[in-house]
Length: 373
Image (cartoon, rainbow, N blue to C red; front, side, top):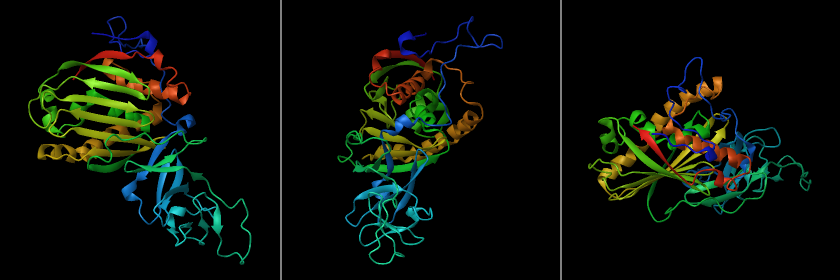
């Protein structure tokens, strides 16, 4: 079964005898993303700098889009983000400390900086010496919200608050992160790729995957394009075992610029997982995950598997990145089950050009894709 839309710019057609790949007749290829750099246009978004719980009284180092950033709190607990470089001799400010006055101080010569990046104290200056205006480092807008410290990476003023995490303060959550040596877009595509789970995550979430491990199955899922990305609606699983009963409502959502939400409703405790693929560099990312704390034992086992599941993803996606870095992505061949990952690429491409959501109408609002697992 084949469904495709010329208006979407995405082809997921199964090859026929006349179009199947051969040495003399290569298939038509989609435009491939550049896996070796990130578009600077995508900087105009909020990105996670750190979980709130990890930013205490001492500064910490983080990185987004290859920009080193020092995060710290003043004595009132307010979070600030500065370029992680003293303007004196280049030592990382995150190696320093926070003074009694609430400034971040360089560990090398004690130069102190206010939250706006201006140097406010140079110990070696004679009392009364005016600090030159050029003694400063870059500062970043910061917002603390929903268990995270968010940093605005853009070259213009922040556009509102960071995207909210539904129920962030109504439930208990588990939280963690994984550093991955692959492009953030590559890992984001992985999170929206429903066809990989049975093969990549053998041994993880055993009850959920029990039914598909017993043989290949075909099912249809629905894709709905939204103003911020899209949502995949999966059919109910036929597995009657816990923790996912047959009547569960399962969906996966992509939200610009880097968020995937995995949601199953109909459980004794709903499963809700929010994952951000923060681009730390051209071929590296930091995967921040937040999972709703379950209240019953079967779901506790499910959530305990989250670090193992992400580790399985990490190993495979890092191996893919090595090939992307060496040869680009032109070698890829696609099938109907790839529709969601290709849609991620298309929406990111439009957003990077500043054409989203104005060009949302060019993508199909709903699309059913046959997936073979």
